[in-house]
Structures are given as structure tokens and as C-alpha cells.
Image 1: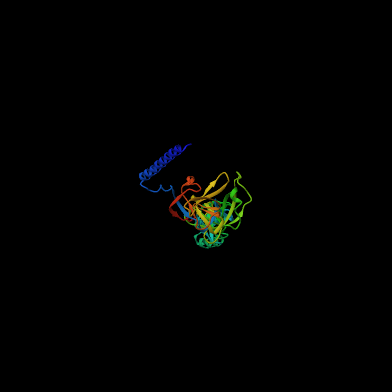
Image 2: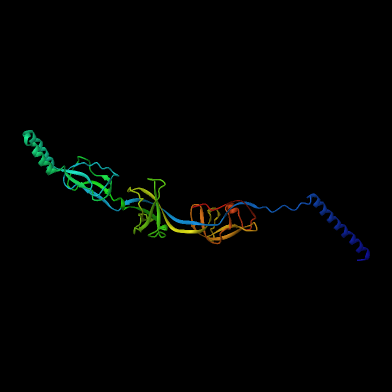
Length: 335
């Protein structure tokens, strides 16, 4: 290439550079010299991991049962009198619940009436003799303090010897027999505390304890009975009442918890994770180990520290490294 060719090539390159600089200046003038638009961030709700007491409970259904139930029977054949008790009434030990007027008593009184018509002068003396003998019938006594469960006879009814008159129950022997599913049964141990509620008294909680796990299963083999004993003076006094029992499996006074909405599950690995908000404003997928679950919160065993911020909205639209912008903050709800 000669000298003239080199000169022409230089002129062409200079012209191209000039055009490029001119285009850049025109582009800058078109945008007004403003900086590029900021990166897009996702608005999310957040919560703070905090310490709080948590309980793990097993919810069981059951009924009340009386351990001691007694049938009061007639001591002799005769006619029932003075039986005024009704179901639900309380009786004391030694209380007269009824009287039995025997056939002999009735025969003596019938004879007294006839004798009085025949010889009125001796009727008073005979009447005193009959009353000393009959004394109004044989008294039927309550064997212990109890509650009347059911009447088995009516006043003025004729009964045979040992016929039932009243069914009574010892209120101190009433307990709850609850049905525990097989997968929950392995977690329940005697001595665990429990609370019982019933529609009989809405809002009232009865303190109980797990007294025993009965060695039997239902016909379907999916539940096993658990006996809950009332503790304290407050207890259900009706037999056959349907109740709900909450048995405390675990009680952690200072569990690290986050709202349930912050927990996601990885079905492939069988693990759980949250999205923690870092100081860089990004969402960081963090694997966690979980413990107690209740209706609103989840216990974190590892993977998070107290005070860390987790995302509670966005669902599976979230991703690791996503820029986020917290718009609200909440604390885990009380269980």
C-alpha cells in the first residue's frame, strides 16, 4: 500500500469515529441525560422470627363414663312409697330414698280397718300395735353419696324382692374415655396434662391428666381408647356426655416461631424452607427444620435466628435472589 492509500484510510476512519460520537450525543439528548430505570422489586409482607411459648396438642373426641355405678334394689317384696327422686338429683350416704310397704303391712292395715268397723273401742289400741310393727314400711337407704342416673320404679308400684328401684353413680368416679388415632397414640403417655371441653358448658375447660392407655382397639383398628381423669374440684357430672380433649404432647416455653404462611415445603427433598430478607434487599431461600405446628405458627428448630425477617406473601412466585420491597411487617400470631 502506497502513501496515498494510507492517507485515504485515515480519513475514512476519522469520519466513522465522528459519526459514532455524533450518534451517542444525539441519543443522550433524546433521553434527556437521565440515568437508566431502577431494577424492579416485588412488594411483600414480612414477619420477624421471635421467641414465644408453644404447645403441641393432640385433639381427641370422647365421652364421660362412670367407674362406679350402683343399682339400689328393693329389700323385700311390696309396694314402693315415698320415691320422689328424679334423674340428676343428689343423695347422701344413709339418706332414705324410698320405702317398701310389704304385703304383710298392707294386710295388717286392711285388717285394722275391718276391726275398726266391728269394734271401734279397740281400734286405737290395734292401730298403735300395727304402726309399731310396720313403721311406715322398710326404709331403702343410699349406700353412698351419689347422683341419681335413672329411676327403675315408680311410687306406689308393686315390686318383688331385689327388683331395681334406682340407678345411682358416684360423681367422683366419672372419667373421660377418648379415642386416639393410631398415629397419635404413640405420642401419648400416662401423666400428660389435658383439657376437656363440652357443649354442656360452652367455654368451660376441665383440667385432666392421661390416666391410662387401654389395651384394646376399635373394630376398625384405627383408634384406641385413652382414659383421662379429672383433676381438681371442677368436673363433668353427667355420664355419656360428648367431649373434646386436648392432650399436651410437648410444651416449649421459648420456641422460635414464624407464621405458617412463611413456610414452604420441598416435595422432592421432603424438606421445608423460608425466604429470608437479607440486608441486600434480596430474598434468600433458606432451608429450615420445623417442630411444633399450631393453627397459625410453626416452630423453627434450625436454619433461622431470632430477629430475622421472613416473607409471608408471594407464595411460589418468590425465588432465590429476587429483589423485594417489604410493605408491611407482622409478628407471629398467638397460638
